[in-house]
Length: 87
Image (tube, rainbow, N blue to C red; front, side, top):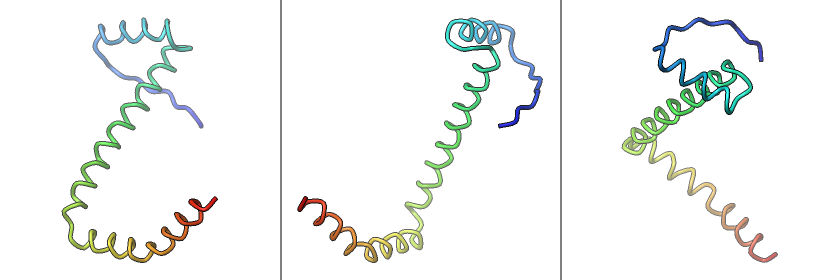
């Protein structure tokens, strides 16, 4: 994936801690910062997903759709379960 140069201002103590961790456990400070940002993005995305699922759990139309899908696939699910059980 292509990389781009970026400049950030962060607290001096935070930078020193990042450098120390990077020196011990990562190829470079850049690699450590990239991994930290990826983890932060993933964490934020999971929080957003959780919120969306909480909202969906209270949405009657969404719940009706889910129930309909469950009914539609119930026979297939049972057939798959029965097939795998007989092996």
